[in-house]
Length: 296
Image (cartoon, rainbow, N blue to C red):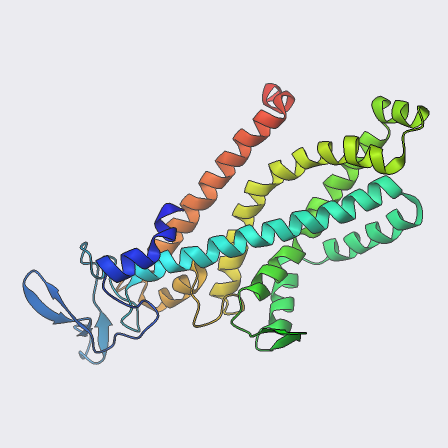
């Protein structure tokens, strides 16, 4: 987290490069010698060029990609995009799921029927199929919402797509939790005392639902990182000139045998980040729900 926040400092003062500008003709100094970033290929007939490999120093620490751009600098900037999209889409998912789940579980009747059927319809679609379908429809278009204009490269588009597809998976548990609390003894007692519905909702229902949403947050963020990376790898996620771990993985696909660090670096970053978020989610669940910890 700290490393990706310091991406501009690394690019400007350590790597001395613009990670979004092509460096096909760039040259750097390695062990006292000036060498081109894009080196003549030594394989086969010797045609074409191959990006420089890891220097393990400030400039091109992890080597260059097919455009001669610094992989380490791009990975740090890509991490900013991936984490921003994952965090923002998590907030969007939790907010929508809380509204739908509480409305369905607490109101019941017709409202519950309509919202539950809507959730079931979204649930029927495989997550990635739904995400890819929405991305294909939205990517490449410009959306004008009053004074706000969203281009195809805006990060708001993947945030919205990822935030929507996981709503049913959170709304269902929230609805079930609300229905359980609504029929609990302390809520029934409050109703018997004549406490108004909105007061019961604010003082008893929402505080109990909040703990459920907090437990979902880190695990959902980890899931969103993987989803964003998958969509970007398929070219229907983050669009140029922005970069994410998924787009860098795609850039490194053609270099997997000659310069594997281009693909391995963001892959390892995704794996470590997701693992840490899942571990944090387990700890958070144990703190907020001690019964589940004793049960394991």
